[in-house]
Image (cartoon, rainbow, N blue to C red; front, side, top):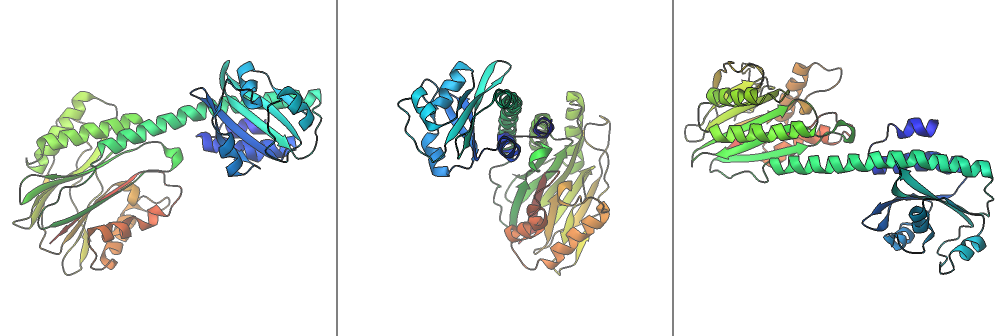
Length: 390
């Protein structure tokens, strides 16, 4: 019952392996464990405990058609118990002894009748498996198989989602004379799922550019896909006044009716005149550090989120950006701290920027994300775009 409850909370194959090793090894009185999955006609070791990495590498990739006891166990779908090496050798004459274990059990992992993998337990002394113990171990293998099947699907979905998101974010940002730029993206913790944070810098001509940052509601493949649509819509209208860019993007999202809302901050940069125009759709306010070091949170009118009301209007704010100015755009994952007022967190971000010194954009970006980067349990994605005028 404890194992079933624990495995129901597991996500990912690595998590399942860790929990199985923590619970099954002491419960079974075994000294070693290996968890294998069936992939492309071979057994792949996805986790182990009690055996060396070198030994596991030698055993990894055994063909399912071989006489190996783990492969035969899965191929036949029946557990196998060997109280001593002599029994194992009789059943598998070609087997070469590679460890100092004295007893083994091989448990097929079947989920809905489909072979998923094999669970191997080993004992450092001869071990007689009583009928009740065999029944219990076989039942445990059923729980492990279901958890492992779910975990493999989870890992595949996560990999696809992260690949999708990575493909939608810019691989590199354009270079412009008079502008030093850096971006950082930190995905949420493993249990949070895939997010929809986006950032972009669009070169318009030699002296103008557009910068955008946004956050799609939720953590899912849908959020990542919508993020791509928002980025495409902003690209299509970039160069128009910021309020118009957001209005057009909002109408597009409202027509699509994705069931998700998006915050966005759009900035038109005029590097020749050292000015910027900003429009906001429910996004956290940017932070500006002036050349003299004075830092402030820009109180840009927040307006409505994108995708809420097709008729929503967006207002534009102007700000001077003389050489040496630093403008920081970010998503709320950078400043949301449980138990802390959001405005206080934004003020703390401004203080960090003020204290960061005369660093380039890359150095400033690293300083700003340092706290959240060291946090192992982020519940939200983090995107940061640092714009430093030269």
